[in-house]
Image 1: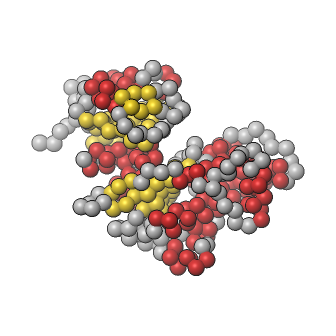
Image 2: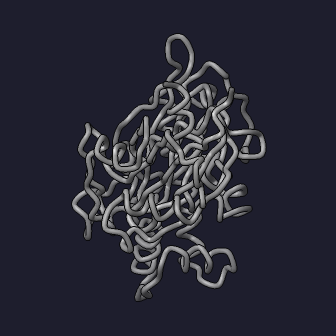
Amino acid sequence: MTDPRPTLVADIGATNARFGLMDGNHLRETRTLRGADYPTIEAAAEAFLAAAGVGRLRPVRAAFAVAGPVTGDRVALTNLPWAFSVDAVRLALGLDRLVVINDFTAVAMSVPRLGPDDVRAVGDGVADPAGVVGVLGPGSGLGVSGLVPAAGGGWTALSGEGGHVTMAPVGDREGAILAQLRKSFDHVSAERVLSGPGLVNLYQALRVLDGREPETLRPADVTARAMDRSDAQCVEAVETFCAMLGTVAGNLALTLGSRGGVYIAGGIVPKLGPIFLHSRFRKRFVEKGRMRDFLNPIPTLVIAHPLPAFLGLVEVLERG
């Protein structure tokens, strides 16, 4: 008999903790709580379960994705004052099983569960279903991962810090931008330009290069002004962001041999809509000289699912 109790999942970032109840790929309930409102992760989880009214069908399986390194039983979030023992939280919540993984690992593990309506293709290419997959996620930072087919079926997600590779320019304008940013940062990584704060960094550098005083803008302000074309430096910042993302995505595809495709996750790119689809992203993805013919068949896809980490957590649980 199928267990009627749902799976408890959570995607916990620096500000918000998103909790949900899942039946397979089906999201039964979801709520977003402010992490600062709760002293511990188990207190936040209990508040969600009470609001969801699970009653006797309380979950006995759970998986949490957290914004921070996970190297053992003791976990400390990078930008939220929650530190906990995985086993102690499991016992406190009355769970038979609790899995805790890095948040971007969870996003990467969602790829096998994405359906046709969950992705948007950018350019041509056909994925090799048995090929390695690359995943990038520009958001508050830049997550980078890969999925490698595992022996006997399933997938293994790579855990690394690819967002911190050194950003290389293509052309004099990008060279000038990165030179300007090096006046403020010892190391100009891909994350310094391919993230929410990175959009602001690009805008500020372009304003200085064009002899104008930068305004104090948020990432959302930069994208809004780019979309209504009311600010030339915001327009160029977003165009540069898309082009540079293509460069880094192509580098990842070459490094991993990503014949299974390269997926773009995170909250920024889906909001750009037609700007991204018509940007230089795909052109820059394949512009690798002698490697153009290697990259041309590889598809690039934007993840449009609103909560891919939840899918990845279920994938990890069901994989065993």
